[in-house]
Image (cartoon, rainbow, N blue to C red; front, side):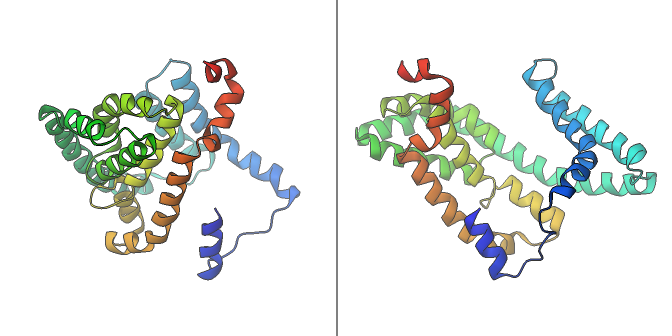
Length: 246
């Protein structure tokens, strides 16, 4: 957030309206219909009523209903243009996901995760060095594989190593998600990077160059939360003190 503020001021990005309490109620009323979309996804999945895919599909249908009949902004000609743009973006993402899934299967078939785990444990027993290697492995995987593939393939292999290094499973989960989040915007296989390029029309090369300072900030945060676990563990320890004590 600090860097984003600095970049916005330095690049003279346009400013929004100043905050005013009088705008809160009006904004809330306008946001209610959109917030229901979020509730469909979150409540449906958490309650076990819907899968993630089902909740997303229902949320899309709800968003179309709100746009067409409540806000009255989505007409049939606009809908076809939206579908056309969505299919173009979806095609890019699906190609990336499908190829990375194949690559993930190949790594599993060749037993690469087990080989990497054995190499890490054979290289050092220093917990600090092990955590550094785990981060480097996940960052490298994030540049060439999709997030879901990495979670399915690498997590069962890397978690025991992290536990041996003294990492709490919750702490390890946060570190994994941040690593894979960085991977989503890192070439050559960055799903979010390609989506941003498709939506904005800005070439991948230009987006990647613009994100270089952001990469530095995110890597600094990654190192910080890896070696100072209290930053991310204070809330879980507060909510689940018995588990923290165990």
